[in-house]
Image (cartoon, rainbow, N blue to C red; front, top):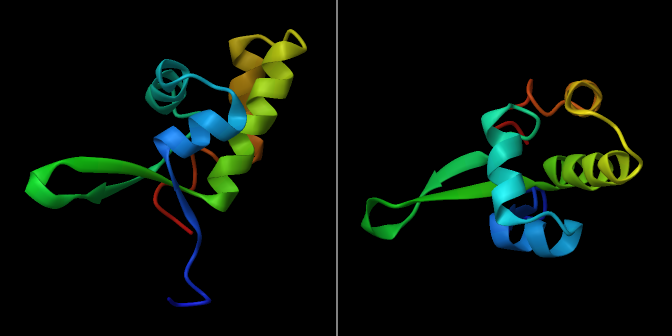
Length: 90
């Protein structure tokens, strides 16, 4: 195991740890609030992986959403945290 390799989380792990549903994660991906790395899995399937930095974004978005933030504000938060600019970057 490379100690310098970035830690990655699966969509299931992010969902469990943030309290966001899989549907919410997909929606945030579609609106570029949260951009996972896409990795190929065996059999040609694709797996969405999130770096630790990307893991923080859904937690903050969840807190803001629970506080009543609208989608425009959530998008701004995601952009400020680097969600839409760091596609696939560790």
